[in-house]
Structures are given as C-alpha cells and as structure tokens.
Image (cartoon, rainbow, N blue to C red; front, side):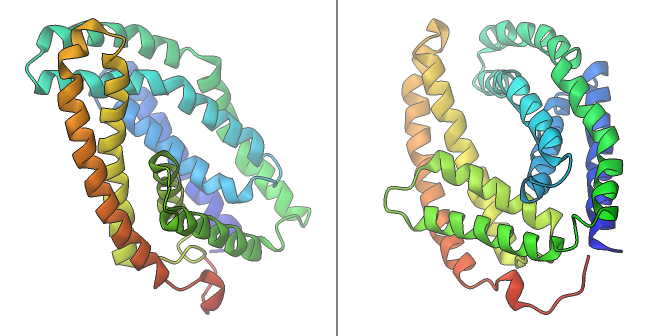
Length: 265
C-alpha cells in the first residue's frame, strides 16, 4: 500500500468511528459516545497536522478543531457528573446531567458538525487530486521532518525546568496519536508508547482536578470539594512529573525516522 493510500484509508477509518460515535450520541445508548467522538477528532487532527499545507487539509483540520471546541464544555460536564456521583453527591450530579441533553442536541444540530462530515466526505478526492497534480511527491520526507520536529518539541518541553503541564499534555497527545497514524515516520517503541499513555493519563487526572477547582470557585455546591480536589491535583501532578522523567529518558533513546531504513506504508 502506498503512503497516500494508507493516509486515505486511515482517514476513512476515523470517519467511520466518528459516524458511529455521532449515531450513539443521537440514540443516547451510552455515556462514552461524546468521549469517543472527541478521541476521533484528536486522532484526525494528529494525522492531518503534518499535512497542513496540502490541498484541502487545513479546511478539514479547522473543521475538526471547531467541533473539538464546541464539544469541550459538554465533555467537561460529563466528567464532573461522574466524579460527583462517585462521591455520593447525586443531586449535584443530577443537576448537571439535566443540562447535558440540551448540549447534546446543540452539538448534533450544529453547523460545525455538519461542516466536519461534509469535509470528511470531500477530502479523499481532494487528496487524490493533489497526488495526481504532483503535490505529494515528497510526502515521505515531509512527514519525517515534521514528526521529528514535533517529537523534539515534546523533548524540549520535558527538559525545561519551567515546563507547562498544559502544553506537555497537548504535545503528548499529538505525538502519541501521530505515532499511531504514521508508525514508519514517527517510529516509537512499545516502551515509549506506554510512557506516552501513562503521562497522558496522569496529566489528564491533574487537568480534571485543576478544572474542577476553577469551577468550585464559581459554583456554590462545589465549594466543599475544592480542598480535596486541590490535594488530589497536587498528587496527580507529582505522579505526572515522575512519569515525565521516564518519558524523557525513553524518548532520548528512540531512533529518528530518517535514521531508519524502512518500507513505505
């Protein structure tokens, strides 16, 4: 399979997963539909980002980013409701869950979601046209260069004494999903994959509590939880820092894509 064929096939798989997540959200079959929709968006954006100046890519990436922004508040509310139920605060959870149905309807009927799926339907033909016009002749080299640069950004961020956990969380996601999308251009060992996943999970736990503390300062029924969440956030960040050291050491020993002799996707 050629590299272009592999990219198109990957986008089509993501498109199928996004259609499936949307159908589940419409039917209300489970509580993970929106989460899976957002995971699909992240995978799509990570695949498209290294191709951003190719024909039609920026339009589709922008559409995916818009849906990500649109769905962020509803996903935050879902996660908070689960946390409140875990703590036995069912009335507080119920008040927030009652708001979700309206937010789901807004997402499903949004022009942003419509533009995303229209863009996904049109994109393979646009990408094939770019191939025929000779715009993708050096795609291998482009991917090697951009994904290596993306990994170096993560390594630099990890090495900084004043690193920003928010930025590292974003860079970890980009590198993890890019490695899934382009395994021959972002070569990564099993150990590095596990390290990326562990850091993403730990920083996700910290980020949730960071956001909940902000909400607790505005929402009276959450104020009693602010201190417990602050304490948990400190522990989550400490765990993340330890895992980031492991990730930093692991990435330092990983080969660069352009140093490997590889077959095309």
